[in-house]
Amino acid sequence: QVQLVESGGGLVQPGGSLRLSCAASGIIFSDYAMAWYRQGPAKQRDMVASITSHGGTVYVDSVKGRFTIWRDNITSTVNLEMNSLKPEDTAVYYCNAYGTWSHNTYWGQGTQVTISS
Image 1 (cartoon, rainbow, N blue to C red):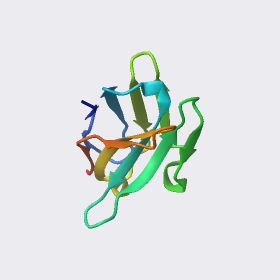
Image 2 (image 1 turned 90 degrees about the vertical axis):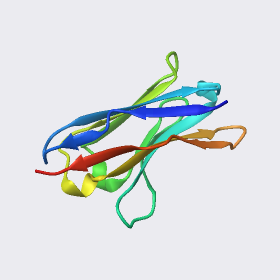
Image 3 (image 1 turned 120 degrees about the vertical axis):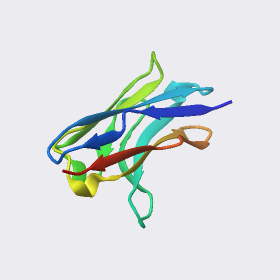
Image 4 (image 1 turned 60 degrees about the horizontal axis):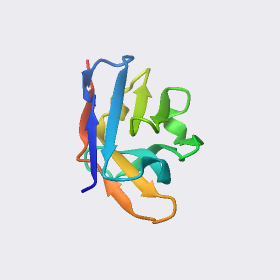
């Protein structure tokens, strides 16, 4: 059974920081590209950052220089460090796993991030 379990969301003031973590089980983690998506109120789910099995990263323009994604293939975790947070970063953040060879896709349950003073 594949599980992606996110943690680390919460309420923070503008300019603050949060770190999200996603623990994967039931997959060969190194065979999967990992990504963080977010879905704001009344918006579609969009990719925020992704990382290949070898560590190559891609960021959406709105978070470049503020967010950092990294993975640990030993502990099967992917993390998202979010700095200089803005109200428009408010969303439910989802962890995603995409099989490099299998093309299987899995999602976590999501974690709420709220930026507000």
